[in-house]
Image 1: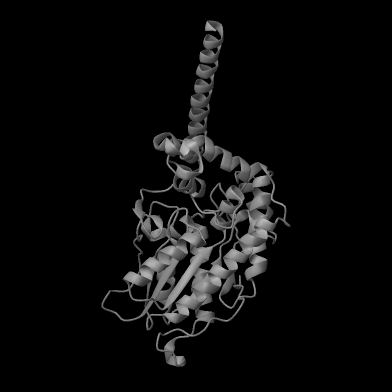
Image 2 (image 1 turned 30 degrees about the horizontal axis):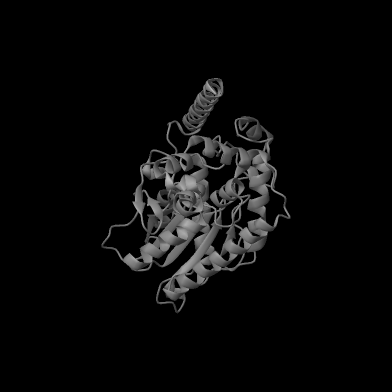
Length: 362
């Protein structure tokens, strides 16, 4: 009996030690990869809990806006970290460059660009954030969602139409108390669902386990996104605003040729030959095909293919300064093409309808 007890104790020690070592290894892998890609151990910025959007960093300052006393257009821009600006400089974000181009070229119709981009947000979380803002603030003239990357990435990680950043962690904390005996041990349960090991597992699933293009879950995800964007378009219209969905460019999803000398400089792009790219592109393209005929949809998928220098950061999604400038410039041109000023239209809000299915000229 003592021998059995001793053996069980040894097995338990090895098990606990193995779990600890696995967690430490996962912590190092994630932290070091964050440092390599983003230059810091943590992913994203400091956030605060928000009952609507789960977490928020807050509005990022936008440069080149007109003085507050001037009357003009108000534009709210939503998205993930690409819209917020994967840069330390507020003046180098897409909204800041957009404000610069628009207010320089349209001085008679100044526009205030408000950067509501949030690290890690996809369309689901942006929708909740928009709800909060419309409750607390006057509606803007134009609402822009800059989406595609995070929706594709989180579906690849979690394989559910409800995917968002921290999906498993939040769901586990809420549901496990009644779903399992382990849920009674709240501190341990919380530690398990917030562990680096589970985060590593999600990333492995995203980058190793391929998504079947005919997967019913993918079809359900496309259905969910379509309904969400249709709802947003109706909500914006109900407030007298216009809604625009800009499908963001990503290195992985480009389908047009790029200059070979530029491609050679982009050898550092991660995951070029893994299932990571396959899963991202399958999801990204499924959403494009579902949304491309919507009147509010603008496809920037291949916007940057004419580049003469690298415009992507090593993850193939976040942009360098040149990429953000190009997106902002074309977005300014898109707004000029598709949004007519009130002096030429009978529109009390100052904006007319967008032309459907626009793909910007390059």
